[in-house]
Image (cartoon, rainbow over all chains, first blue to last red; front, side, top):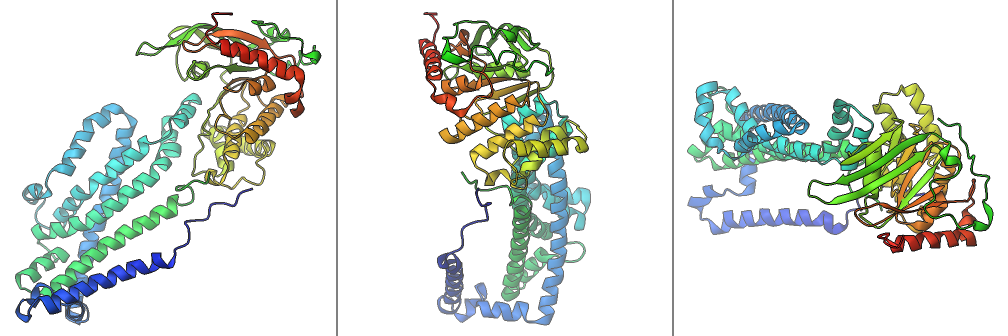
Length: 269
Length: 279
């Protein structure tokens, strides 16, 4: 009777061209400030795009240094994100199952989110030393809350009629969780993963600034380049760190569409 | 539970002899076993609103009982009491079966499951063996006219088709008592009539023992039912009861017959008198 819903409407030329145009404008402004506004002595404040690419990415030594650090930061971010996802979902599921758990735990989840991470840094250093583990912990502190709050929101968003139906037929609680609440929560949960994925990269870089034992992550390099006024490398490091964030963010968006795309989204009337 | 098949379907069907007002059930209805009995049931909410004034009601096997009444008169509450989703403040609700299914105005489907898996949901999750529910679901899907749509997801279905999925999901469980809470309330007129016909056919096929059907539409109630109850506005109580004299199977043309419209008019009048002061 009705053709299955096939996807979003096709992109127009404007949808395709506008992002490219904006990108060109940004690069143009960058060049303008670097080459016209700044005189030669102060150009290190904003080196031109081509010099950043030349020094940071086309120089073998610099590139290797950057990629090694990126790899380390990526592992911190991904481990931190993994821990946040497992821990956050477990906490959210527990909270969704009983109101007394939610009422007892939620305040701490909020504190976790609102306490300045910097305030925790000295303590984390005391307790867990100044290496890899502490970086991961900072990462988790930053990335955990969105997983908890969005999963909890998703679990509680289940249609009341559906819950009535499950209650009427005396379907066990764990089956309700597995077959109803968790799938229903998926769109919200994945949105939380996506936010946390971006934050986990922030956490990994921030952690680097304080916990410098062991091999350097991208944050350590950023601090180093800043101190030595190596502005091309500094920009290169910032660009790579942002790219890492964009990659994990995009990956979770893609994963979300893969998992929920066939049923979640606009409904046909 | 399914032995009484239309003992009363042969009786005076023709000529639309005006039904007796406040008639307590069809003649043969008294013989069939009661599936649920309400005795002096009242319902008030914690804020003091009284939803139901004392209600007495018995639904017997083989009956199709419709309840018509204004919005908020407690019709839905009555169904929720019957299925145990809510409890009475006073009086007793005694169901004599635990095979009770409830269909809501919203089809409440699982959007991530296909039509087939949605129809199977309740049977599957209540622990029915797959070998048992799978063929039954396939049969019911055909029966409600969803054959060929097994693999579709709810969002690619029309409102009427979603409601068919919802009906099928309950019918897989072969309910003794089928509670229907304005199931067609959100549908357009044509889908509404078509689904009414389908529901009637399922009833004639004895796919469920008895129905307690809540609706705004008097014509729909008269067309589907063996008995129509009129409820007053809040606090809801039964102000009139009409035995519907038409036999089964009922042709769609019944809707245009003079005796049908006369009966519908009589029910509508009682509905309009509403508070029952005139009854």
